[in-house]
Image 1 (cartoon, protein in one colour):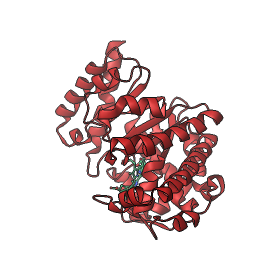
Image 2 (cartoon, rainbow, N blue to C red):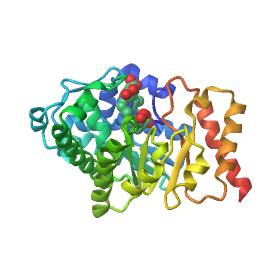
Image 3 (cartoon, helix red, strand yellow):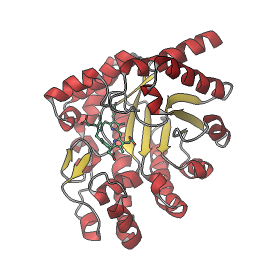
Image 4 (cartoon, rainbow, N blue to C red):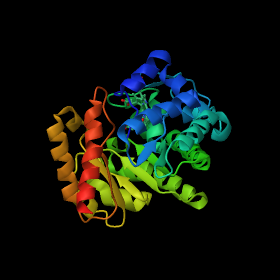
Amino acid sequence: MRQAGRYMPEYQALKAQYSFLEICRKPEIAAKATMDAFNYLRPDAAIIFSDIMIPALAMGLELDFAPGPKLNRAIQTHDDVVSLKRPEPAKDLDFVMNAIQLTRAQLPSSASLIGFVGAPLTLAAYLAEGAPSKNWVGFKETLYDRQSAFEALLERCVEAVTKHALAQVEAGCDAIQLFDTNAGMLHPLELERFALASAGDVIAALREKVDVPIIYFARNVGAHLETVGARTKADVLGIDWSLQMRSAADRLQSHAVMGNLDPTVLFASEDVVEKRTLALLEEMKGRPGHIFNLGHGVLPKTPPPNARKIIETIRSFHSVEE
Ligand code: 1CP
């Protein structure tokens, strides 16, 4: 997650020349951001360079990053929802699809390319709030007080992210990840009714049209993992770092699992990074369908050699095992 992110010197060099949105909009530069990270880390899969808020542009909103996303207006009423444009990502967001094609052409054929979208609930939360927030009161107030407007907004988000994910697969992505960063801030009733139901709708709609693995990552939903698996029916569930990975996996028999090293381990010494990576590999030994990953995104100021150390450690662990 966030391989190119804000911690690599190659990315900082791009940022000295272009804004974040310019990098997203210039396919050659977006592909370079992905490839710089891929070439340094050499993981099994690369993630495209974009952001979960990019579909807001196709919904007719103005978007800026400072560095978190900021919209020109928040979407909180029925009239606001009705004013949103029906997105046509293949046309409105052609720069994303062009970046995917360029990246796919540069990646070795053995490497997978992961496309991504925000899950409907998380995209709706950002649209209702207008920007990241500490308590997300604008989002929660819309959800509690203007429920039919919020439901209409969620429906528009289902449409926007389904179309955007389909266009990404058609452009060459081998898997799709849904990020539901905000799902875990809901009461269990709202988690199921709004977040899991809408993510499940996107996943079901994608399955009708394309045959790629679908990864669902929600944060802070550990108490409800079984429900998350059953309601979304994702192929792979991302697990955040608050859970013991093996017991999370045991609770999700029929799903592959992805995760879950604490991203702040990467600020420790190389020795600790290696020990914690090996501990997680040992814990998951014999459990088919474990994709090693962090339990959330790589943080700014992470020392790049520690990110590479994780991958080297996994490779030597598996070569000894074989
Ligand atoms: O390699 C990569 O960096 C991959 C591309 C990527 C991904 C997968 C970016 C680039 N963003 C994301 C996902 C994303 N964006 C999520 C879901 C994952 C998560 O929970 O972290 C979310 C919630 C966002 C929204 C967003 N965009 C934030 C978070 C704001 C908050 O609520 O605290 C931020 C800071 C951005 C901007 C952004 N997106 C990506 C980058 C590299 C940046 C920083 C821009 C800069 O360098 O100035």
